[in-house]
Amino acid sequence: MIRIAAVGDLHVASDAVAPWRDALAPVSRSADLLLLAGDLTRSGTLEDAAALVEVLAPIEVPIAAVLGNHDFHADQPDRIAALLERIGVSVLDGSSVIVELAGARVGIAGTKGFGGGFEGACASDFGEPEMKAFVRHTQALAERLESALSALEADLRIALLHYSPVAATLQGERLEIHPFLGSHLLGQAVDRAGADLVLHGHAHAGSERGTTPAGIRVRNVAQPVIRRAYNLYCFADGLGRREDAHPDAEGGCRS
Amino acid sequence: MGPLEPPDATLAERVRTAFARDPSLHELGIRVTVISAQRRVALAGVVATLERRERAGEVARVVLPGFAIDNDLAVQQLAAPEPERLP
Image (cartoon, rainbow over all chains, first blue to last red; front, side, top):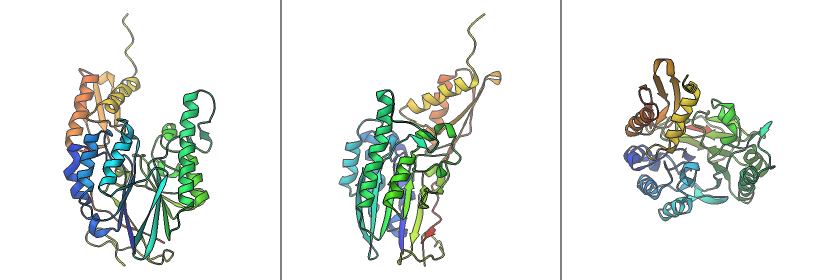
């Protein structure tokens, strides 16, 4: 059994340290790995990052994260990433990490991702430099995600994003803002590279479950969507055998 | 004749913009409904803390002075997870 805890859109600042620290404390017992799908901080300041470090430092399982748009707001994403790396968090930016769990290699490839919209209503790489820069930012991140995922030699491969790769998990959001919530280029990248699970956040009014066009499971773990401190995704040891899930007293997985 | 009062949707957008910009909030997901005829503004959605809920009310009050604030914002609940078993 491999138990993966995941949440995005924590928006931590100094005023929210205690509730998040308490809410994430069970992760060390009920999960093997914690994945964070961006918008870890409220404003992307170093003060927020210090608060986030207070939240995450006590957690005793491996943590991998991507940053989100909030984490970029103060123009210090690299310094936030460095603070997180210092406490052992793998901050993925078109890169990947492999964690050995229960004798299996779990690979996570991550990127913040970006917007642009979905099939039939996409931004085009055309016109003003600002428009081309917008689209090309997404293209570049999607390409890096595809490369990182493709290169992963793991028993279980997970794509970790902030922006959504599919419209399905945006259900509940206004259609007009879909181009600011994700891009089909990210979904195509995942489908070409292959993955067992895709996690993202960002879409607070979206819905949790969807799939890519090729049928890969997508889960929107934005906290306002899951309405929990984190969700727990449990993979059987055989990574292919389906078993029923039974939550234990702490909301963990058990066979 | 004085200038036309902006439509309710425009006033609501001003409040939303203020929420996004306010350093104590940086909230992009609060739903804002303005009813000028009643001088009321309603706030709905979820924020991380009680302090941010109160701050949202203060910011709305500054943007729309004289409006009553119906602050229906909820504070996020960080409950334990329900596991999903995947193949």
